[in-house]
Length: 501
Image (tube, rainbow, N blue to C red):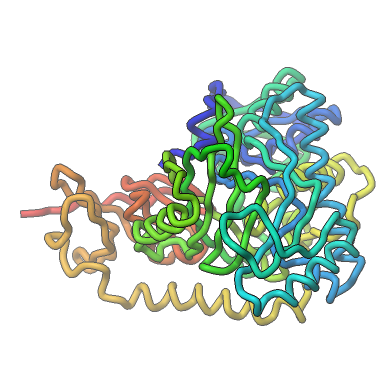
């Protein structure tokens, strides 16, 4: 389950934090948002420490589809319906992120395989044509090079598509590892395998880590994808989904020469990337589901079958999964961590478009920290609230969380007894009245941890394809031994001792 980006871009090691340090800004998270913010702040003359729980650009960012686009499926008609200026600011900020990556890569000499490609949102059903036409008009009025088309280079006919020129695709790890090299050369300190567990907002702020070492900083940026500190209750306004990815070699003559996405068929996204010798790598994303929902292997099979049907000469070499946070009003949260925050900031809720949103988050957070004029006039401020747009989705999200929190605790469990589990199988089982997440390895040994997520107490589910435990409420993910793979949880699942006959 290693992504192509991870497989093709080895990284240099950075040490864990071993002693207390003092800097101007502590950045928590070493993905696209955290590294983009750290680069902008370092370039602005601030001393910066980056604290990454695992390895740089190896979390959500290392498993993205890496489209760098201002076209985010069908969003501009909706934004323009609220306020045309909102749509224009959104388009300007997203396109600026695209151009900023191109400029920065050129400035630093980073070969991140950046290619200019048009972006398409398409539909095969004629029922969606008018919606696509409206989206194309709204995107053009917002300032993008958008048009409605009926022909694409996809290997199947479409009823229509929104085409936006001037977009890009790139290798996210090569770009971000290049940023890391550039910022460390300018004095930024990067600490890997350093999990943050606490934040005290004061003068200065104090960031505590799992090892006990402390970073003191005038300002703190929380860029952990899903905030590990949620003092503004942003979890009540975000929904977590996972999508699967298959990738493989493709003859260059089969390249569809664009970036494509549709909401049909439970999402299908297509792009390619360059390979040595003129070959192309086909990347297909889809099969959206909620973490912990299970049957992930079946979902991978459906995605692979779709790929084989439409690109029969593709040879799949990689498969992986990505995770996204979607906000109730479809705009990211980038700005003060909570209404009373003076020196703590957050970046989250990128809605599947983390590359452009992560880069713009870096630009915006740097401006906020350094006191420059805020670009985009509060568009992404986490303190905003739009009751008209958010009331219904907020109610649905919280009903889903409540259902999992209550029903999953009352359920009998996925298996009646540990003895039922076959090698390679995992399930939630009641053991001595305690709900346990139990996995039986290929040698027949059973391993158990608490099934209660250490974030807010929901019951985890088993992902048999990735062999992980996942929380359906807020997306925390854990290894078979209970270690935290992905937040917002910062503490592992507690081990449980089993006594098998």
